[in-house]
Image 1 (cartoon, rainbow, N blue to C red):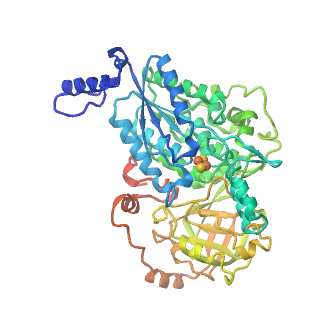
Image 2: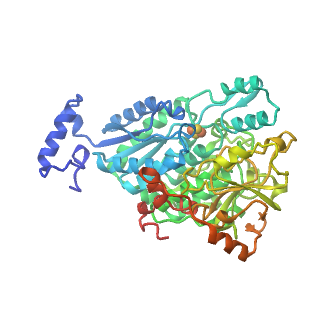
Image 3: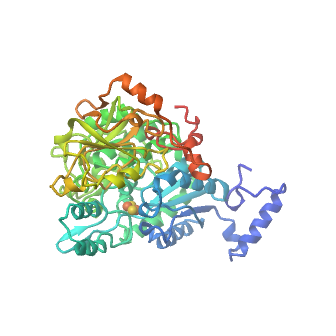
Length: 567
Ligand code: FES
């Protein structure tokens, strides 16, 4: 029954609804709830706490605080587990399971009795999966993130995974850092609960969720261990109860204007390339497309203002103390659609107000003195990427922006691992390294492998960056001249599938081009010989191969889009 509320929603179907609810109440009473408690509106709390997710270590205490907020506001909080995804603990990679988490979360929101839901997420893929789920499930949803970890102090420097992990590992590979030292650093990189402490994917997605209106602006960056994080959780619980009385469906917050605001924020943050795929997936659930040509227009008129790693120097705790999202949005308010509303119906203009009373300009720059006058990301098009590719120019080497060279091709991750450090590898610093066969449809599942390691023999010579290209992703915490998300990917039979070692490839950031300089007759002969790798026979992997869309469409499952992926 559509007008059912609270525990009466979504009755099990025995052909006798009154019996189904009688049975449900009697089973609920076995957990000690009174009839009065069970008569309250229900707030579900999606619990992603897991002993295989270090980032979400504080989920239990956050959920306690959410419950407090729900109870104080007159609701009944009921938490339920969903899939949890933590970047380093999943094979082949967490991205392979983002859509599975979205599917699981949507199904559990839609099937269980709840009037609103608080989504407790944080680590890279969890917030996108939860917002995709919320958009499709349709009941009011509040996003709560676990918050970023705090930076550690280690022998005179600050460390807070994972830009620092990569920096140390690159130095270890180059022979700059000893075995003893790298082992010592291992225990000092991530020393509190919370998500990676830089402007990686988790932080970027938290800022985007706040921009879209799914949480207060300040809640995007409160450190995981700060008492304010618990107060944000309590407030999220109370907010969910308010939404039950005055519902705002998630789709109302995901509009062409709000998505454009999110893109502006992504650019001004110098945020993660991954966020582009995730935002396309979230928007796609509401029939809103992320257009790469529009991204380029926005990128030309949006400065990078946030000076955090990997683009700059600071950590998320610095961003928060510097004024956080309110300070950033105040700085770019003339570029935003200020009429977009949040869960409380407040416009973005109202949420920004006059900005915070204090802004630390070391981390949030004024428009007159930006980190970069243009946005961090650009889309590239050309014969190698007819549907587009992405470069994070704010984390790349400007001297490599205009680059034509022969390429060295690795056909999948195994080939890369087997050959990249071979002393006999025929490679020079000006060569372009290409990895293919690692896109969304591949068995690898679009991993964060686009940051191909510099071949050891070149790293030892001091080479710090090379042009690297692939159909996979890069960690939001990584840096370098790395072209990502090439579409169509190699497994889909895109031009990338036809590239061979020795071909010449041209990158032009100025022209937004990515071209394979091989004549059409040669490509036609290669195409005639090409066949896709065998499809997995069963299970999730088989469904991924059959249904996953390309990166510019968010790499979502085709059948979960309102138009079945027809776009
Ligand atoms: Fe969870 Fe980086 S591993 S946010």
